[in-house]
Length: 272
Image (cartoon, rainbow, N blue to C red; front, side, top):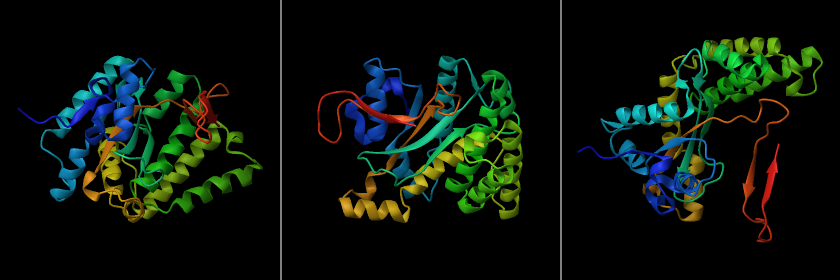
């Protein structure tokens, strides 16, 4: 019987921190107690250990387990990953046993390409939202996964705003964002760091980037300073995207069950 390397959020709990990492274990626990957790799955810390012990390769049956987990999430959401009509998009995040804030990599809006962005525009009723999400994905994937010079993308964004007389990113129209997408793709071509159009290639590259960031210099330094063993590894959490940029009724933020500064027992949060 093959080893289980992928756990749906509905299959774990808070006691599985060593295997699922802190984030994966807590997402699973929130799912257990009935919180409205966007569905997803966790690739375990054991895969990270295997990855480094076996020349940055994966267990033979990992791909099948990931495909089964994606299919399960598709069933819940009524959407298909890599679908040109109603696409399912993912976030890919790290999740070590203990929190290592800002030390490892994240990719958002994964699954967007030249076709699925049109479907997202149709499904959401907002072309601007779809292309804003696409330009964010291209910029983040190019930086986090491909190691491109992020300043070139930021420069293109600022030049776009300056040429139009805009003061904020939100001033940009759908047409502006389409042009920015083309500029980002041209930068990638010039650098030889092209974002793949195939969402499955994107997903595996994103998972690899998270495992790769476990051994990034900043993560190694953080572990040394905080006495965190390097052989613990990180899990990878693949979760259905929710959007903070879909309109004026959307936001992104963080919430706590009590005030993190004083410990006072009341609901506390910050959002943008």
